[in-house]
Image 1: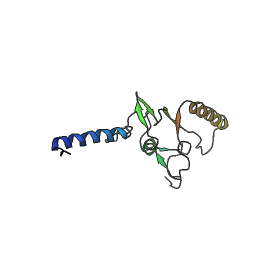
Image 2: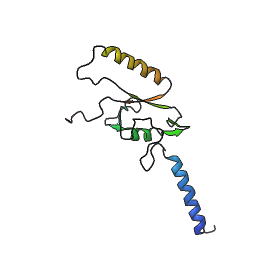
Image 3: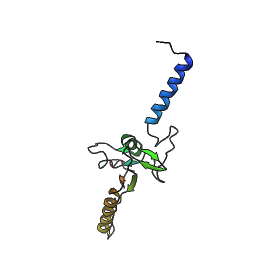
Image 4: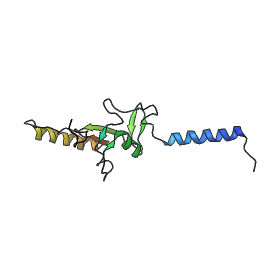
Length: 136
């Protein structure tokens, strides 16, 4: 077997680097600039991941969840590892004193969520994203 020249060795290393980088999610760049994320959604936003990844006992960020579900940007849209488009939905319901029509509002939210889930992978963003034990 022939020994590889330094030039050939460097080509192999470059090829391996390209392949490995193609396997990692492109949702958040190294400079922390999000790609394909809708306005108002940041990589460090806390999400309700229970319906996407069941049995999680801790807070999960958008970035962590997108990496876990192998999210990618495809044609300007955010999709999961299987190609299903991802949508974010901000939940309502954190009222100190709920409005008079809160039951209708929650029912409307539930209907919207059920409709979206038929076509998209929906990531829910809770209305209360801070630590509930913390007093601000």
